[in-house]
Length: 235
DNA sequence: AAACTGGACAACCGCAGCCTC
DNA sequence: TGAGGCTGCGGTTGTCCAGTT
Image (cartoon, rainbow, N blue to C red; front, side, top):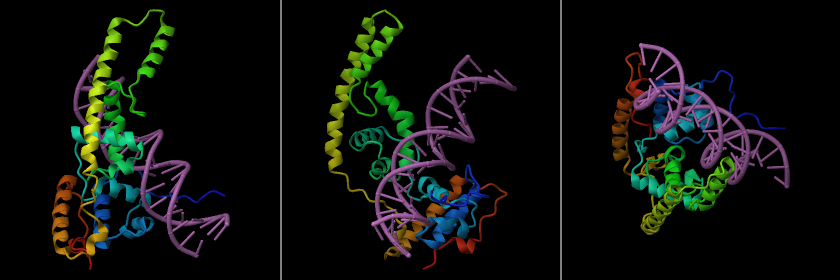
C-alpha cells in the first residue's frame, strides 16, 4: 500500500539553497554532463538534499541558459495568448520562451498577468470578457445594497469592453506572428556535449561559470571545491 | 524606528504518467 | 499484466524585501 517517499527525508536539508550547495551542484553537473538519475545526485555531489530538490534547483535557477529578469511586455502578451490555447500547462508554455522556466512563468501569471487581465475585463481562466461575472457581481452588490448600479460603473464596464476588443485584435496579430516562430529549441543541452563544437561549448560554459560566480557573489568564508575538478568536464 | 502589508519568487508537496522488471 | 520506481508537472506555501503606516 502506498508508495515510498521519493527520498529518505530524515536528515535532509530543506529551505533556501546556500551558495556552497549551488556550487556543489553546478560542479557535479559539469563534471558528469548528463544526469540519468537525479535520485543519485545528492549523494554523489555531497548534498544533503533530495534528488527532486536538486533537479528543481538546477532547472529553475542554475541552468546556464536561463534568461532571468522581468518579463517584457511582448513576452507577457505571448504568455496570455499561449495560456488561452494551452491553459495551465506551464511547461508547454515555457517551451516557447528561451531561457524561461515554467515556474517563472507560473509565478508571473499568478502575480501580474492575472491582475492585468482582470483590469482589462477578461476572465483569466476563460480569457473571455467577464460580462457575466460583472452581472453576477452586480447582483451581489444588489443583495448587499438595494441601490442600483451607478452610471459610472456602467461606463467603466463599457471602457473595459472596448479595451478588451483592442486586446483581442492584438491577439490575432500575435497568433499570426507566433505561427511563424514556433520552432524554438533550447540553446543549451547536456545531451549535446558530444558534438564537434565541444570546445566552443566549453568556452561558453566557462564564461557562464564566471558569470554565475559573480551573481552568486561568493562570500569570503566559502572556499570553492578543488579548482582542478571544476573544469573542464571529463571526456 | 518599528510594525504591518503586499508583491515577487524560490521551494515544497503530491499526483500523473511513463518505464522497467 | 500489474506493482513499484522515477521524473515531470501544476498547485500551493514559505520567505524575503520594499513600501507604507
